[in-house]
Length: 169
Image (cartoon, rainbow, N blue to C red; front, side, top):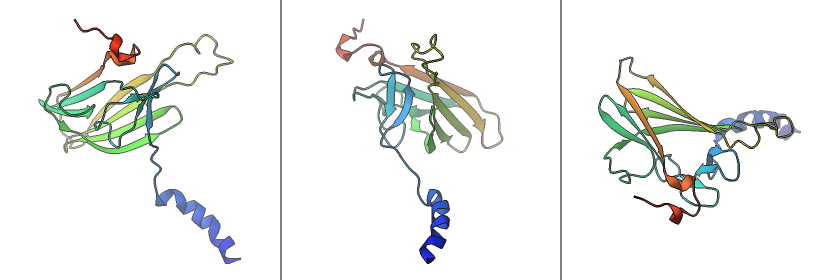
């Protein structure tokens, strides 16, 4: 009987005791063809991948007051020498994945990867569009004014398959 009394309390506290981290977090996922996932602990550890395991070369940087910081993509691939931002949180929701970063002590950065859901039976005009959005929100965390620039790049692997079809000129 005493277990039955404590069970509701345990169920209420269970979400506070641990956080669920999926093996891969969805970034841009709206069809089998547009299906990009991050399978690393930090967004900047490795390139995101397609659900088949192929690399999709997303790279992102933020420049704050002429200092560059890497947000996404592995180190030294772009030839830019930059420090990493500090990833402080990731939240996976049904249609949105939200990453939160600190850039030094100056800037709080939030990136949302959103793949809108369309009712396939009702929104017949939209269900063929593999649409996803990436949005950046920047907020000063030290109360000061800062010059901020954001860079986001997607390489050709997301467009063609296999990647050997990409021809550089």
